[in-house]
Length: 441
Ligand code: 5AD
Ligand code: SF4
Image (cartoon, rainbow, N blue to C red):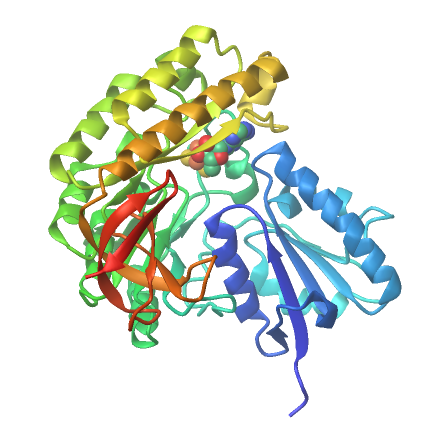
């Protein structure tokens, strides 16, 4: 048998991209094995993100570095995958870039053929979006895994068309994956020793699979996965507030192994901004969903995404965001400055008219408030005991382990006799805004 060539994949952006990189490794597994050392690679893939301008900037800079590397190693091949491949297509193959191959998110099955075309000055490109592709039966190669937690992609694309967002253009129409293939993948992971799966989709609440007279929606799907084994934790991301159903909350409450952690991106606390963002809900609707979570799953952690300085945002709109944050009392948030993306509805219709200075000031106020809320939420955990799934060693020392509670909070504790992949009960005695400190009991 000839030795396989080496593939190095660098992934930027969201969890979906990490999941896609595992699919890519699987598609090429006959001829390439993955390496963690770029110097040893025959093929380098950059799996890219277009969500904000600074994400793309980083990748252009990285391409310059790879260009230097390629000048020294003429046989090295470089491919761009993901959302930037879709959005920038030809620009990436223009003279002067080091790129040999450009492949969009729905075209990964064509990679073996495209690679045959590449070489001696020939480029290859496939950015055709599909209405069906879900990579349903491809078994991802978990090449950068802790052996405990894994992502499972349950649907692809998005057609919500939030006015600021590039995703519907780069990832195409929404489509759900056959539930049986999802359950099989989760069961195989469990049998291989994994203890946590995260079901991924741009908007998991609109997961829907119809076969003959039977329909599987997201609450039914998550229940099927939870029933594989009570020792398998199930997480999911991301939910859209407009269709977070009571059914889903009841299922979360019913199964101990469905994690009590709900990520519900609000984007803004102002109904005027939400309408302009085409989010399809108001502040009141969002707060009603938060009340439903607090009632049905009272021990759930709640996290969110927030955009500061969207088109025409006033100080009053910004104050609405801050007051909503206080009201919900988020455990955690991802917070961003609005970044105009070419060709989106917002770019076409609304001027990007909040100054950079103002955006920065508002973002900083949002970050400062969230730091305060996270710390106060974590302080409530001090003195309590949580079931923690051990996921790895702590960053600081091999004498300490790190894992997460059902709520998704990171806990660090002395390792004693515990191993990665074990469930342990940990009593929390101290915390920061980002981490709980505890001891196995
Ligand atoms: N500018 C800033 N943030 C954005 N997001 C999506 N598009 C943009 C944009 N143009 C944020 C949203 C989304 C998260 C994944 O990224 O908060 O929920
Ligand atoms: Fe973008 Fe909105 Fe779809 Fe999320 S739901 S990916 S923010 S369009």
